[in-house]
View: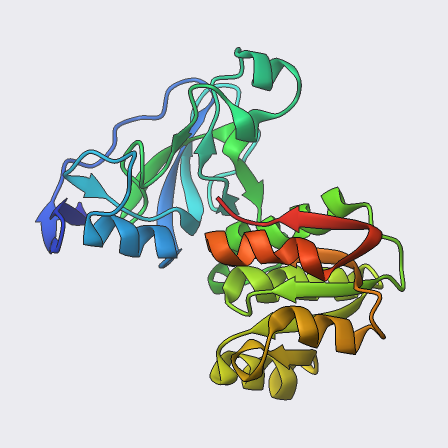
Length: 259
């Protein structure tokens, strides 16, 4: 099968790789349809990822179609699926507590093991979810959008809460959209006029332009000096995370949507 391989930092090649074999019990063979390109993939290509050994097939934002199911798998051949790329051991302390995303031995497709920038991939059936009417292109976006949905759920914010999302990139926009769905009153803060322009014109969000003044002052002005009830930092930037505390109202909540 064809696969896009990052052999070393800065070196991407199209290779012929052996196709996966018959799926074992509890696994399924998936024909890859769509793969998103994430910031993680850029970090791998640039040689900046701390947990990676080359060569590596990247790709963890994935959709596909089941083409063969192992014993005990309740998925039909031809089923369009979303792939959860976080493979947990199921036995460690985090997994036993129902937190497989915190697995001690977690393996992420495209990072710790080869990912989906190829034609076919073997995946544990527990990591496959029926696309349920989503197009396969949209299904490939579920992984990164789920990050924002998880952040909003963890915030325990109540409808109407004044909410600031810092960072208007894909993760921040996803967080803002799910916050809106949850009934929160959302404002986006970023340093990029282009990103803020998109958020305002295409998604109808209120925005604060951090390039035009102190973010703390802007946040206070937008809330009559009280601060926001809920703040989500989706930048991954140390300075932004530190300054985010100043945007939170007394008794408010700060959620770090970052690594």
